[in-house]
Amino acid sequence: MQTEVHTSIDNGKATTWCNGYAPMPAIQDRMLPADELYGPDPYDVNFCFPYHAETLYDEKLKLVPFIPRLHAEGFFMHAVSHPEDFQYMRFPVPKTLEEMLAWFEYTYRRNPANMAYAVMYNDGAGNWTFGAFLSLIACNKETLTAECAMGINFREFRGGARATLSASLLLRYCFNTPTERLPGLGLRKVGWTAHSSNYPAQALARSLGFRVESMQRWNRVATHGKKGNGRMLRKDDPLGLPGIDDFYLVMGWDDWEFEGRRLAETALSRKLIPKAKM
Image (cartoon, rainbow, N blue to C red; front, side, top):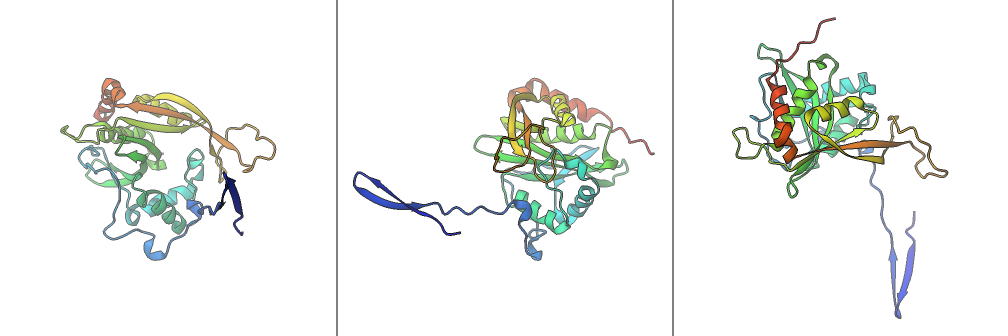
């Protein structure tokens, strides 16, 4: 489409101007050459904060960088087998592994503010198995802030307070100061956005010490069949898609020192409850 050129005149002076903006395709619609799908080798996580392996480790589980060559296929298989698990999340369930790899590359590896982790569980005999995905987004070194983002446990790794354990490790990493025995990032604030209908996520955040700061109405668009807020759109809405309301929960460094640290330490001190076999 041809760009329209306008003329503005002020105090006898004339100039022309236009708006040449061209929208970028949505991340899920961008494709990559085959040799870029799995990222570089060695894999560069390209994250703005340092990785502290000892702080993200417990004898029951550990958080390691999500590396597509190792973890993408397992995550993809869960996503296509259980798309309902993502009804409250921004993640667009992919049709192909290549589509998911491109989404991950653009969303995480090429954005230094975002970082994804593979949650590895110990079976008690020293064998570690990939059982969950967890991530941080909007990380900012200048303001010392971050947000907990998409987290999902695979079906065989649910129950036994596993979500609480992995989130506790992540918060310890975020809030511990760099000079502690288990060094962390020393963040001042961590946010948590939860879909207004995602009651388990809201309950998990509160159990960790997060507090509701606001209800963000019409905060997102319910694309790809995501669950909306159930409210009518006004006539001639340009998108024609349902909206999403979110709760925004926050934990500050003072909340961490007052209660969050104790809650995390208590959770991590418990034994991992094995899931009953069916």
